[in-house]
Image (cartoon, rainbow, N blue to C red; front, side, top):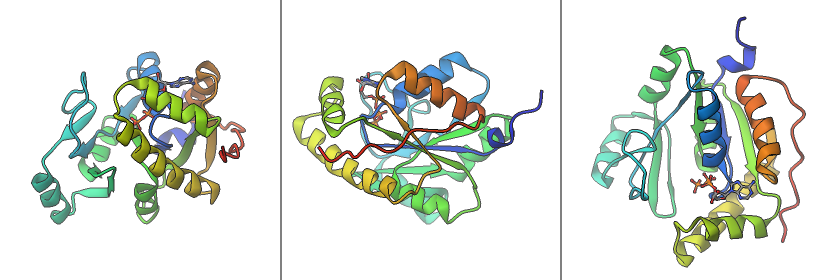
Length: 203
Ligand SMILES: Nc1ncnc2c1ncn2[C@@H]1O[C@H](COP(=O)(O)OP(=O)(O)OP(=O)(O)O)[C@@H](O)[C@H]1O
């Protein structure tokens, strides 16, 4: 069976830090080990315990990152919480060459830049049900200091503002993980779904 038309377009996944993007992606890759390729970003942030270079990120120095910008290696790149993140053309091309759907985890600044390219992806926003849920997930993950949680929440407001502008093709609310994953899986496979409406997120 030939793939659905949307399967041939990259899928950009956005959403505030702590909303559950990595959790959804992990399940997808476990269920479909051969169908997708995650566009591994370059970052200047320090690896968290268990994160591996080349799998979760390409961990590079600030100088190295600046050189890559100068070489125009990035489709998009942005600074977030004091660290740089970028998606290289090379990474995305390699996934397409391998016949897999390219999945990209990109925040609002980056999405604006991707929109100025000819990548033509599907834009998906993963939303928390409420701001309180987002706060408790960030705190519960145990990877952040309280200051870092505050920074991420401030950045989350910008992500949400952009989503409220209608920047994305689709929204999935990560309330119940099984329900959210079922929708996410369908979108990733290229199925057309109704999607959720964006919650008010004003709490
Ligand atoms: N539906 C859900 N209900 C409750 N907790 C969840 C749900 N989805 C994910 N979580 C938990 O929320 C925390 C944050 O999830 P995760 O690390 O996947 O977020 P993320 O969006 O990838 O964040 P970042 O962008 O910072 O990498 C994790 O501890 C995860 O187990």
